[in-house]
Image (cartoon, rainbow, N blue to C red; front, side, top):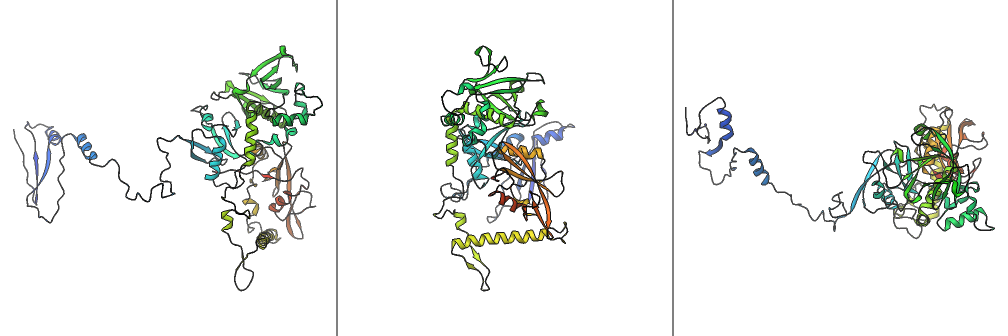
Length: 535
């Protein structure tokens, strides 16, 4: 049966009209008809002038073209209805976190010590000092001293503190795309400590005899003069070196000079015919190795390595060395840095000393920042209500008295003999940055080493061997020592002591505050709390 047209009327004010081309009916006729048909809605009743009807949509046989024609009617960009509110010149609000295509911004991802990360946009030529300054501002840190970026290779156990003048993007360009290398934002108090205490970092036994070029000059004077000129004395000594492609370690005598790293093929001989060239200092970086006993079978924990600075980290390119003490390792790594960067480290050190101590903004003549000046000291001791304390000396005295009174009340509640442990409130030490909970002895040493082996670096942790006791871990002369803090009772009240009850403290906060100004039984006063940086 052939047909030139089909029309079907539907009851109501509309008529649906199907128009199709000629053809012979077949089982697939329905699909063909639908694919090549046109649906038109035609009104049967004349439209009223006051009524606005929607326009009919023509559905063509080419569905793709229909979609394209429909999407083309949508504007490509929606205009901003409130341009005056989003104008950068009139509003401080950041309307977009993405830089303009023409800018030279570069996105970097930095981790904190709590494994959380933060991504920031920096210029392509941003140095480690500039990135640290930006992170201090965005993370609202209380100070901007002694911050550093740590280059961490977790799989290989390598870590290195970036120098302040190093360009971060150039450092990242040497990383493998498939690796787990990351940047960690942390404190580092020992970055320039060898400028302050050179004899501690460069013992006389490790200084080469050929360095004594000045007659009548002591080793201390020689080292200080060399450091001021941006160089370092020649270093010598035995190191354990890991043999390539083997687990064995060999004891070799090394020499570190301005021209490079050398090893002796005959004992400790310094004759030129016995010296073998190992590496050029300008083309390598020095890393400390974490967990070296497990990863590389090192004979001691004082391991470091050197690798080419412009190549991705590969195990076969690592020159792994092991010292016999922390002081020896620190001496070698410090000498590597001084010989490589020279006067630049001296400039970095001077810039670090001139850095502002606070980020709170403009300082007032009395030394207070804007945020501090907005606070008002009040006295509520009278019956007539509160009064504003105008005298600054009286305000500081009231602040100290209020803090001490609160601590005494809190310590008294904690030390009452009839108060069971379940009802005892949380101790104040748990809110302090120097308290690290139940970390192990080894982890405490690693945390202190990571933030710098400087005198006075400390943390307090719970003892894992003695119940209800604490341990004070303190760094002195490049060594970490541990002191047991024991709870005791006197007059029915609970105290803490480190010297068998001679000196008693009502809480750990008072113990720390006392030893920050008094050495007591400790070798040095508490100075730098080992903190966990979070982003």
